Amino acid sequence: MSMTQRHGENTIRLGDVEITRVVEWEGAIAPPAAILPDAPQRVWENNRSTLHPHFWDAETDMYRAAMNTWVLRSAGRIILVDTGIGNDKYRPYAPVLSYLRTDFLTRLAAVGVAPEDVDLVINTHVHADHVGWNTTLADNAWVPTFPNARYLLNEADVRYWDPLNGHRKSAVVGGLTADFGNQNMFEDSVAPVIQAGQAVLWEDSHVIDENLHLRVEPGHTPGSAVLELTSGSDRAVFVGDLLHTPVQLFEPHQHSCFDEDRDRASVTRRRVLSRAADEHALVLPAHFPGAGAAEIERRGAGFGVKRWAPFAEAAAI
Image 1 (cartoon, rainbow, N blue to C red):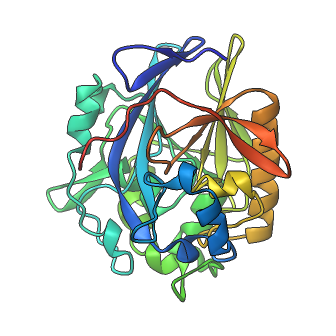
Image 2: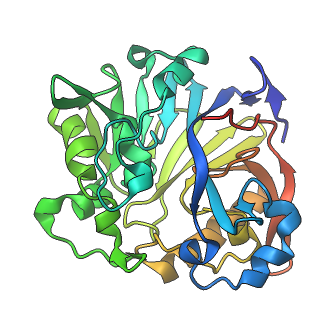
Image 3: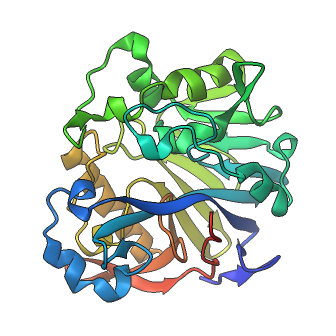
């Protein structure tokens, strides 16, 4: 796989597709045990050289994450993969996400993307930190941020998170079910794009163009998806929240506290990572700080980083 840098240090080219990383936010979230509840502390300590300081602050024992949006230029269109937390969103049980104020749109502009330029938005799944910039507040109403875009949302996730359907959420975060952390999310970040007629609901798979293909890989949520990039001899997979930390590369069975179906998420993670390793595909998670993405390889019962992508580290936010 050839990762060719273009337009500065935050854009690479794979085949006919340009990939630019835009970081909305980066920082400490919680102690590692709160994120991977079954992972012993020794896993973090044993992998200190890889994890510290970007993924885990060993001095404070805090897990660190970034909110990455991947900007793709493919087949003449501008495509966003995940839209982060968003501004002005009230998340009463997730203070780190609540009433955030960032210069995300300025950061998009810095890589040549204005809201009206975006043709397609892909939400890898419906969680508050992946759909936030779907909408912005205007005249006390939530409106689509990207007026000319179609928003690709998996139908199973839309059904699951629609509060009118009353699904019981299974994941537990700090003693609270995950729907607490996502409170208000559907109403302020999903429903408005559906009501505006800009949503495209898809089910098992969706072909975007000759380079890009969406496929459901459930477990983290019922409709969690991966976006596969195939262009010439180059491969990449945008995995959303199948990975929260490189620890889940070393030990793919380690589930995150945010997984709705933990067993299924673990099976899905191993299957997707196995394919990525065998195909020498670049793996682009939603929340990796540091280089943000990596080519992986099989190592024992798990996987390791063969090489990091040449994306720059996030600037201070």
